[in-house]
Length: 413
Ligand SMILES: O=C(O)[C@H](O)COP(=O)(O)O
Ligand SMILES: [Mg+2]
Image (cartoon, rainbow, N blue to C red; front, side, top):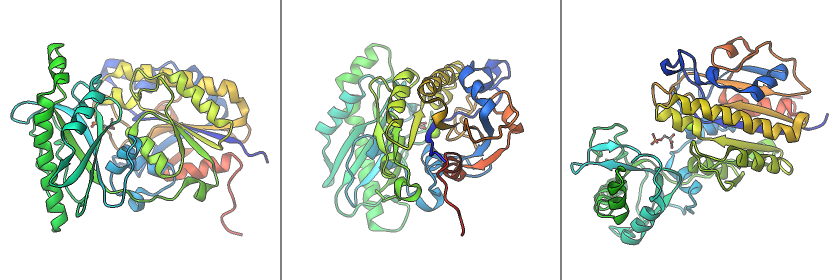
């Protein structure tokens, strides 16, 4: 049988609950998504628990699971993925963190965990930090900007440890936390001290920065601190090509996701216009995915906008993002028609009213134009897909893709 190409589309934080501002509908119910709906005639649909029922996934653990790697075995922390995705090279012993440009008051109490989210001056601020703080206690310090408020920090030197707690309090109104050692080792104690010293120095530099003066004069929240979380060292992961035989490429603008994809050996593309935000160029991403499908077996298209809208509690922006994803999917299918299979889902639910990830299952659609006895479901949303046949966890996805693209091999003799 002909081996089919595979398009995997993940709308970050796609799943949701009934939203009051949408008249009690979910964003997926509200969105006009003619292309996705037209796939239902040849699709299986249902619900996916990215990790397991009720488990609240991070985007890192859920993506690992979706790519077939059990996060309980392979996940060792977020920071190294963020740093790799933001362009860092990690050497043995380096400790990497995810950072948020944030706004704090003089008491280091958090006013905005994302300093307004869209920070035009982020690259300049990162440059300023790199020029003014290149070492702390003999340890080399490097900052990298990802997208919007997202930063990563890499510490390089002897005797460092990733067993240190976050400085990000994860809540507005709380003070920036002291990093604490998470085990009894001297290295953890020393690393926590470095992180705390560095936090003071970042505040000194950023609160005096001319780029923040400019922001404040424009009525924007200053990006006057970086909240740190998810310390990790780099660990080698199995490569997708080795455990699936698939050649693969990813289209994403989001550092964390790019880092996960790079770690499993995927080629990663960020086309011009892809911002990782609500203002991303969806069609440029669709075109890049279509182009990569020509010479890869599996192409992964990641869209962050749905999750960003959810974290900000913006229901209508989430609806708009879903409508744009529908157009992007239509664009790729116009080119490849029945020569590909497509799986569309989210990496977790981020209900807009909750503004945070939840453990709710996520709708999943598997379109296979030639191989499927389809489900009789005529809308793709959290409620309708309950009548579909898929009740899966993230770790099942790779096997489903291999099976319906005629690439699976027999388990047993
Ligand atoms: O957008 C992201 O990077 C995360 O999913 C959420 O992180 P934040 O709450 O720190 O913005
Ligand atoms: Mg996510």
